[in-house]
Every structure is written in C-alpha cells, then in structure tokens.
Picture 1 (cartoon, one colour):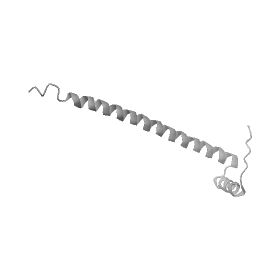
Picture 2 (picture 1 turned 120 degrees about the vertical axis):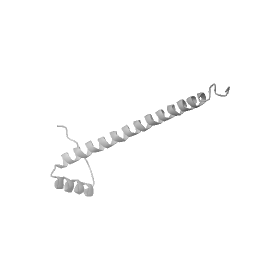
Picture 3 (picture 1 turned 180 degrees about the horizontal axis):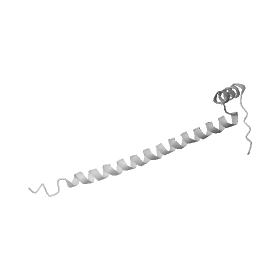
Picture 4 (picture 1 turned 90 degrees about the vertical axis):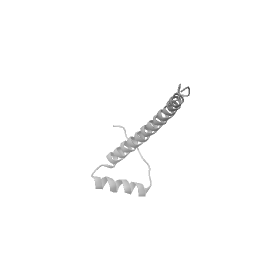
Length: 80
C-alpha cells in the first residue's frame, strides 16, 4: 500500500490522535474515512448543482410553452 506523509502542527496532530483513539481507529483509517466522507459531500453538492441547473432549464422551457399556449387561448373566439 502506498504511503502518504502529512506534515501538520501539533494541535491538529493531537486532534487526529484523540479522535482516532475515541473511535477505535488508526489515524490512517480515520483520515481515509474523513477524505471519503468529504469526497461524498463534494459529489452531493455537484449533483445538487446539476439538478438545480436542469430544473432552471425546465422552468424556462415551461415558461416558453405557457406563453405559446396563452397566445392560442383566444384563437377564433374574437370572431364570435
């Protein structure tokens, strides 16, 4: 397995050590899980943004269709 070296200050090191101890994990496993969770969070945010953009496109298309439909509502009725 490849090795990754991380340089950090003493306070951060103590936080990681304490949290790993409390969770009964190695520091390496804690960091692996933290990165996996962070990656999942980023993917969720990206997906939410894609869905928001798609929703906006659908809304705009619906507005155009609604305008076209409204213009046909009185077709032929003015002659009555």
